[in-house]
Structure formats: C-alpha cells, structure tokens
Image (tube, helix red, strand yellow):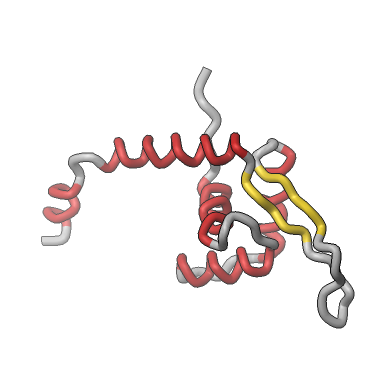
Length: 111
C-alpha cells in the first residue's frame, strides 16, 4: 500500500507552520505563504487545509485563552504531530532523490 503524502498546498502550509516556529494560527500562515511564494493566498483556503490536516491527525490545535483585538475573537493555534513530522521527513527524502542528477539538465535548459 502506498505511503500517504501531502497535497501540494497541504505541504506548503505544513512547511510554513515550521517556518513560523512550529505553531501558528491562520493569519501569519497566510502572510508567510504570500511572502515566500509571491502569490496571493486565501485565508479560507488555509483554514480549510488546517482543519483537514487536523482531522487526518497531522495537526493538533489549541485555542488561545485571551480574546484578540476589538472583535474579541480567540485564535486557534495549529502544531504538527509526530506523524506529520515523519511524513515531512519522508517527503523531503523523496524530493531529494527526485532532484538527484538534475542540475546539469536544468543548466542545459537555460542556455
């Protein structure tokens, strides 16, 4: 049976959470994704992915105890589980294997 993998956007969200220190809520995730990819990202899309990853057991979440700003909204922080970290490590190994030997091909294509 094939190993579970991340979808492309799931992968980006997971890596962004790690870039933000291993725990984050949706707004900083969106801003960091936009900064790093140079593309606009919908906050709703990020939140849907966060919920999906949590249902899969790849994220845990906690509610912040303090209301935030004038809206009084509470932030939900997401953190990768050990299973998610293992999946990310395997994904990185797989991508590294796929990239092996392609430097020359990439250099030739830019000439």
